[in-house]
Amino acid sequence: LSDSGGSPSIEIVVPKGTVPEARGNQVFLFNATEGSAAANPALKEAADATPEATSASMPVGKMKLPVGVSSESCKFGAADQDGGQVLTCKLEQQDVKELPIKVIDEL
Image 1 (cartoon, one colour):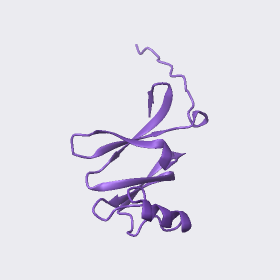
Image 2 (cartoon, one colour; image 1 turned 90 degrees about the vertical axis):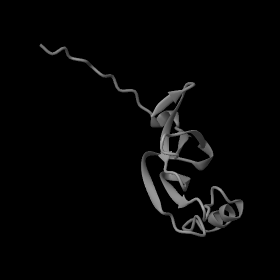
Image 3 (cartoon, helix red, strand yellow; image 1 turned 180 degrees about the vertical axis):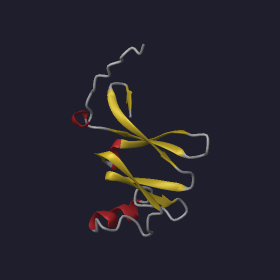
């Protein structure tokens, strides 16, 4: 979770060789060589017509998120050391709560 420029966001490290597709509280990972609905507009139209099938290929993995995000609120950031990319998704303000942290001095 980060707070860049006043808008809270969540950062997801996407492994090298995969293409992410954010939907609700999950991010599906597709093989980069096969493509996904997020990367291919023709597949996106097919995914809109049939919500159960997001791509011509099956996802190779998925990640569950603590809150829902939309694919429109996500963008790629910098690459990490392993060659993967960081996907940054903006969060709705009502999804983020500030919790006070009390530090107790130990003797």
